[in-house]
Length: 115
Image (cartoon, rainbow, N blue to C red):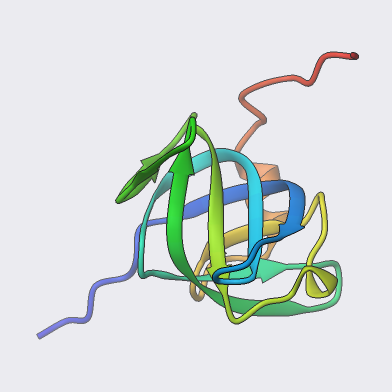
């Protein structure tokens, strides 16, 4: 019996902040794929990779079980502290490709506007 590979997931972190439970919230846009509560993600920095488990997903103030491509959301992540991650880092499914390879393959789906 073959073990299935997880679907690709790409999420660029735009904001990071501390919350009471589980401790760290990251917000941004799901650029590719789908992720569900309870799954493990990798956070890719320039020279490091951290792991965390998604405790909750919040869209427009409501908790949901999953989020898909094109949605802005906040992921509440256990096993990480805000000092470990920052804006511009990329989250992928556990075992996902490094951010450079993904960014070359998947173009940005939105542009930021000046305030």
